[in-house]
Image 1 (cartoon, one colour):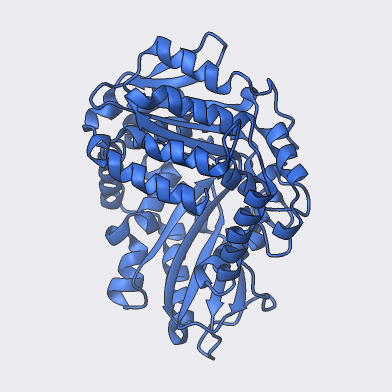
Image 2 (cartoon, rainbow, N blue to C red):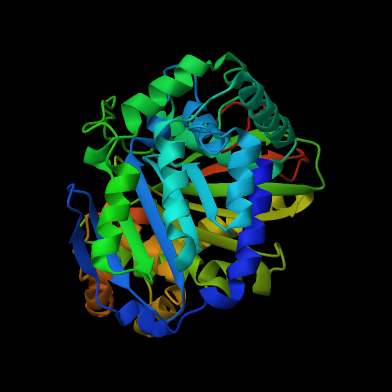
Length: 455
């Protein structure tokens, strides 16, 4: 999304803030499987609490469909779709968004090209019209392409001195090498200047198609009206995408450590390793035990060991990431350069202890309680619920998953949690250290890497 679009999104967000909040009853609302007259499918919650409609949608493919040697094409498309389309130039397109407080944005993820649309109920016709134009007749005018390309390049240059960005990018490179997941989705300083308008048009033609489309809508609209809006918006897209196949991949085997030299006051440490796929029978056990080790904020083991006991870092966390063709766990912390080695050792020690012993029954019970309780808070607006419903579709979950989730969480046993801990952490860690290299920093197991940029 361009700078102008971000500004408009902020304006829209402020304009709708008072209307966006809905009770937690959102999550308990009936989810309908709607099929439009033209065959567009959507998960839909009709909610008249506020006169607002939120739609989240995604096409399969994402950054994995960037041409070989040209990472960043999908990202540039996402930034340009709202920069003029149909009979509207960029300025006029954004003026229409602004006038009606319509929030429209696009984003490329690893496996999907995603979009969001939010509007007041009375502005729905214009909002869906603008989205239809953006998807089906983007201009990609040279002046707009070069302006957005310049913005992307500026961000990539900033990333060369951003330790967090460097660590994130180097970690994915270490984990996945030449696989598409190892490529930077926002491109590189070398690749972005080579992207042509034909590359952008080819990406749109190959990726934006109805057969991979997933849609979630929450808001004040009836099913018949929504069906017509979906047909008007997506009906003119190609029937089938022509995606390049992406192979399944397992992240690199730990332990490995890479040091990226960067003269900054604070050293950033990114750590992780192979994760557990979304449909692995032990996924929920892994999700719960990961909350205990590093996903639970102030209550996590890593937080207690690294910050509270040793005062090594302000924060430390880790999370499970799952993709269509792989899975990771990945964590991050920052510390003084002269305490980086001590911080890495503390993280590794706690990870090893969890792998060998697993959680306690009390930790497991408290984690289940938190996860179930926090779900309602995470689904308290139309936008949040639409985002969750889209993700559940992408994860190939059943439409009643929200209702079943607490039961699935509660069914996790202590033995399953211990098994998941062994599966995740028994091999050790992939670690990327970005910062200065005092003698107290643990020496890397692999050669010092050159500076790189992150997604």
